[in-house]
Image 1 (cartoon, rainbow, N blue to C red):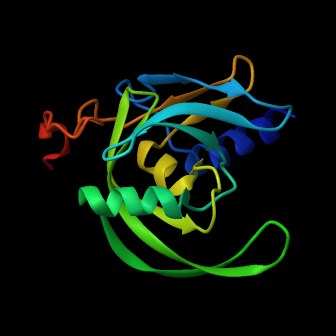
Image 2: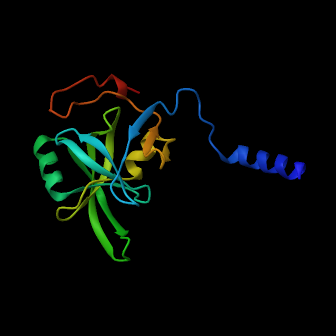
Image 3: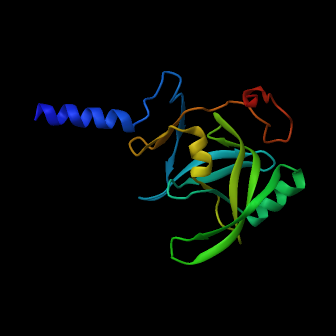
Length: 171
């Protein structure tokens, strides 16, 4: 049994990223909106406050067409590509993908140039992996409901449209 545990430990050590002391330094409370969905407060430069549904199964952050129109007016978004994907119900859809200038998760984590797929109609915005992977490694906790994020710059363009300190993005 001891040999199996040592072998398993050696195998697992090579497959997992070990967190350093500077990681997991931003905690964002989530709200359970049902037994299976969680939301976080967010901000999108050019839009202001948004309520984001957290979806680790979604490859992209999503916004709707109305949000895109407002972001285009403010000049805080740029076209990246078209994306053809399969929805949860099995249907396929082609949507445009835009890079959003800056997105905040919970106010304490600002991310620059986050790719977001644009869905038709008044769909709710989703915080998917295109944003979450930028703050990786991260922890999704059910009890208590929260995200614990890493690699989070804490400043960016403010949601009011005024420019704040962008030094966090100088790399």
